[in-house]
Image: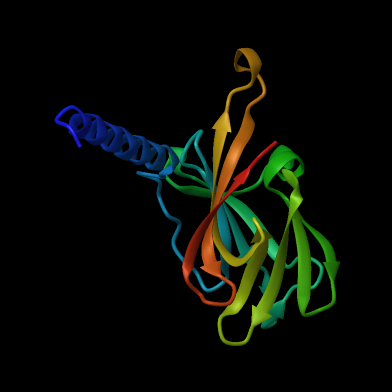
Length: 184
C-alpha cells in the first residue's frame, strides 16, 4: 500500500462512520418525554411534529379485558403541561383510534385508523398481563412504543408519515428490538 492510499482509505472510513452516526441521529427520539408506566399500559405513539403522546391502555373491568372495548386510548398533551385528555373525533377517525376487528375472548385483533397494513393483537397473558403483539418485517414482537417520522407534503400541505420505528421485545426471545416500517 502506498503513502497516498492510506489517507484515501482513512477518508473513506471516516466518511462511512460520519454517515452512520448522522443516520442514527436522524432516527433518534432525543428529548421526548416517556409516559409513566402503568400495569394496563399496552404501548404509546409519538411523532416528530411535537412531543404529545397517544397512549393505549388495556380496558380492564371486573378483573378482565372489556370484551367490546378492550383498549382505552387517550392523549397526553405535553405542550400543555402534560394534560391527559380523550382523543378528538378527528384523531379517532383519521389517525389514532383503535378498532376491534375480531375477538374470540382470548385474542383480540385490532387496527389503527391511520394504517390498514398493520394489525395489533391483544392477549391477556397470565404471567405478564395484557400485551399487544404485532408482526412487522416478518418479525413478531411485543410492542412498547411507536415513533412516527412525519413529513410535510407538497407546498407544506397534507402532512404524511415517512416511516415508523416500532420498539418492543422479540416474541420468542424477549430481546429488545426496533423495526423500521416504511409508510406509503
